[in-house]
Every structure is written in C-alpha cells, then in structure tokens.
Length: 137
Image (cartoon, rainbow, N blue to C red; front, side, top):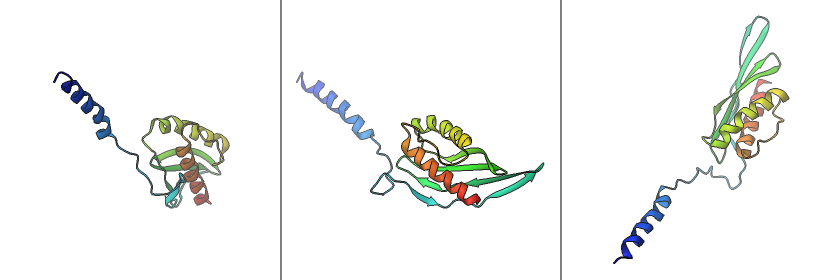
C-alpha cells in the first residue's frame, strides 16, 4: 500500500502533459510546401504631392505553422513598407518578421534570404510578397 500511492500520483503526473498536448494544424498536404489559399488583392492607389502610393495585399499562404499574408505599400516604383496581415503565433515568426521586412526594403524584391529557424514562415512570406508585387503589375 505504501508504494501504490506514489505510483498512482506519478502516473497521473506523467499523463497530464499527454492530455494537454495540442498538435499543430496540418494543412492536409503531404509535403511541407505551402499552397496559396486566396489570390492577391487588387491594388488601391492614391496620389499626394507627386508621389503615387499603392497598397497591395499578397495572397494568404497556408503553412504548417499557420497562415501568412503581407500588405505592401509602394511609393511610385519602390517598396515603401511591408506589413504582416496574418502570421503564425510562433516565437520564431515574431523574431523573423522584422528581419524579413528589413531585407525586403533593402532588396526591393521578394528575392531575400530565409531566416534561420523560421524557414516555413520565411517561405510563406516570400510567396505572399511576390504575389503582391505581381498583383501591382
């Protein structure tokens, strides 16, 4: 009887993490590749002081970690800013987004490096960014 109580307590303590486990949402694809869920939005343009500003949303890309979507603001022919509309709730993503945006502004294209530790998010970001650039025309 003296051994039964600790065995029971330790067994229950060992099962609690198993009961609380929440698997990541699978997109249903057999590979880790991303797939576009929605097309890029049509550009909206405004003009002020001789500069034409165009805002375009990229496609929503479903990744293993969650959806990724960017919004790109163009000032004339340059990428002025990038904003994440959707991103996975993941620590690596939170750390990677500022790096991805900074590289985009420097490169002025979607031809940027993948952030180590956030490969899936980086790939979804680049795909959504390229869709926004293509939608702008």
